[in-house]
Image 1 (cartoon, each protein chain N blue to C red):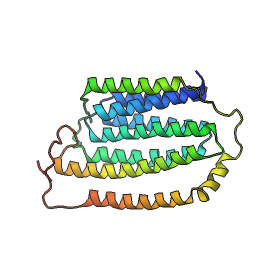
Image 2 (tube, one colour; image 1 turned 90 degrees about the vertical axis):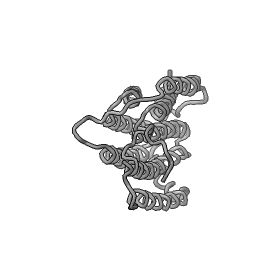
Image 3 (cartoon, rainbow over the protein chains, first blue to last red; image 1 turned 120 degrees about the vertical axis):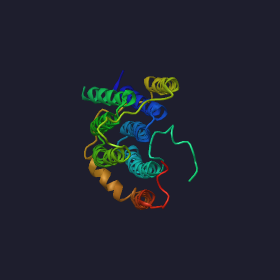
Length: 101
Length: 165
């Protein structure tokens, strides 16, 4: 196993772990953590494939923009979670079961 | 060798995030995962992305997540435990996703890294950021401003009929 396969395998594991966290956790904050994990898997793949042609810089810049978008997504997601908590008094996702405002 | 160490650290902390039931342990294992990913980026000659990862993820997003954990739990001395559901489905989904993507990773024969390190790559990164990628950077700055205003609006809005229970 060379280092390319090692790094791509790490990215694959991170993606699958993020998917499992999203599906199986009850707490909404944990679901956000799973999303961050999946975004990081994509980022690792961008960096690894960009490392094959380092003078083009495309992988690095795509990873940078993904990081900034992840920050934006986390800010909006946490604001929504706070809002939901203030209304339902819980963030357990299986107890949030109505859409009445 | 260092690459192996940080890959194993990343995988182990991600696995801990999957199996743990404590929310705070999950947050701290996410910190370890992000730190070792930043180390991997530095080892892959993407120092700028590594530093950005440290500043934005470990310095920003994790703090936001910890604030959310503190604000959305009634802290009365008990430990913050959350439980799992859909366990069988999650295991199946994890297995299939890991098998598919991992199979493609193990069978990768499309080339490898160049042997020599490119000198002054980070210098060129800064030049590119200020020339070729200037417009996307400005757009994403405006996007960040909009997102922060929107998040403040969503989280800080006061209505009269709060608190269902």
